[in-house]
View 1 (tube, rainbow, N blue to C red):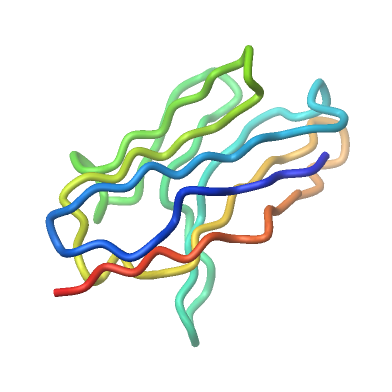
View 2: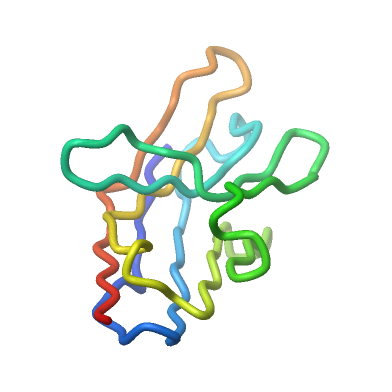
Amino acid sequence: VQLLESGGGLVQAGGSLRLSCVASGRISSIKNMGWYRQTPGKQRELVAGFATDGSTNYVDSVKGRFTISRDGAKNTLYLEMNNLKPEDTAIYYCNAVDMFSDYNYWGQGTQVTVSS
């Protein structure tokens, strides 16, 4: 499975961005997908994700501002980010988990920078 993110950039506080992640390869082996983010010196954290039953979950700090969605026809995962805050600044990674091995696939990451 290969994951390719896009959509990051520099935005002012209060602005919006939409991240995209296109999956290719053995897509049928994916059981769930999500978005993580990481800042220097900190562990990578789950921002938003889909569970195997299709339900979504979000870290508390982005609830009401971020929305995860997917388009099966395009094999694409999205993260709509509104009312961005400087603390949202991070590298955002797309993640997919293999249903047979629980192996985690990662994209290369896309930088999101929110200026105050």
